[in-house]
Amino acid sequence: MSEYKVALIGFGGVNRALAQLAAENNAKWQSELGFQLKIVGISDLHLGSVIRPEGLDLNALRNLPTEKGALAKLSGGSIDAATEHVIETSGADIVVEATFTNAVNGEPATSYCRLALSKGISVVTTNKGPVAFHAQALKREAAANGVHFEYEGAVMSGTPVIRLAKELLAGAELKGFEGILNGTSNFVLSSMESGLSFTEAVEKAQRLGYAEADPTADIEGHDVRLKVVILANELLGAKLKPADVPCKGIGDLTLQSIHDAAAANARWKLIGSASRMADGTVRASVEPKLLPLENSLAAVGDAINAVTFRTGVLGDVTVRGPGAGRVETAYALLADIISIHKAKVAQGK
Ligand code: HSE
Image 1 (cartoon, helix red, strand yellow):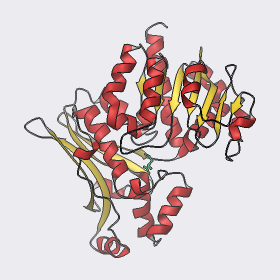
Image 2 (tube, rainbow, N blue to C red; image 1 turned 135 degrees about the vertical axis):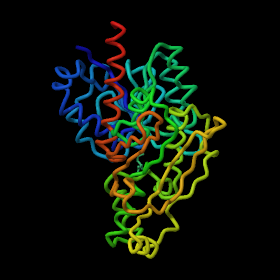
Image 3 (spheres, protein in one colour; image 1 turned 135 degrees about the horizontal axis):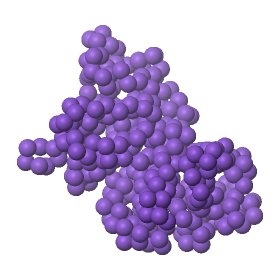
Image 4 (spheres, helix red, strand yellow; image 1 turned 30 degrees about the vertical axis):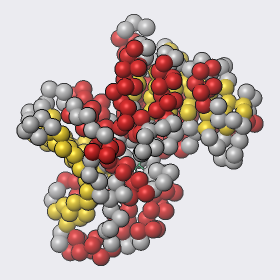
């Protein structure tokens, strides 16, 4: 049995959900997974920060108000986000990075990850920015310090695709993939089919916790572009940067175009894809595609995501599941911690 001391960077929906899962399940995790989580520090731009090496009260965290500086009211709290201080002094074994995604350069999350890894602290993150821009460098930093950098939740939230494809399709001759990789835009398209306006559907996706801080990233395809880069680099050995991938979102699709598609037994879907070409290069794109209803991706509605891996040995392998949501994304963080725990057990640590 182990206990992992974790520091949470960002205390929005996802890390709050992780705290809630720990509050509800620590005893069960201890017996079923072999570890439990103790939260020793939190940093949040809006809420401030707190450090408590003996562990914060998980039930109190569940009910923490969302008002500015709320963490300052806890013992050991400060109005200052003090992220570097929390990473360096909370005594964490694992930093859980879940701040907003910066689709331009992955900062400041990348610097937080790098700092933690350089101090010998493992990092798990759901943040697409550091992974899409700097995965290789961060993995090297982790290896150099004998720790882990894990990011299952960067693509399709808690639905396992990165680790599944990397580990279980490793010998299946992966040639490419195509998928619905953004919950918000898929939710908006489904909602418009049911009669909601574009604006109403986006607002509903925000309320349900699917959308990015700025939902433009969801609607214009930039969020999918980061995920395509992550999958292409990780699984196809590409060296893509987001700017290398042509990207068009769903902003031009009107209620009329959605009704026209339905009349033609088809559906618009925002598709992210990448394929390995005969010359070994990898070509990727993000664009709305009109899919006939019999296409398996056409049936994927609401905030559900799906990705079809094209393999030489198995043919097509499709994984489908939640692609967004607070608890769903927090589950990916738990999956990463399970992976770290298994590696430690295997090394006899
Ligand atoms: N905003 C994203 C989505 C969350 O809607 O899919 C998960 O990356």
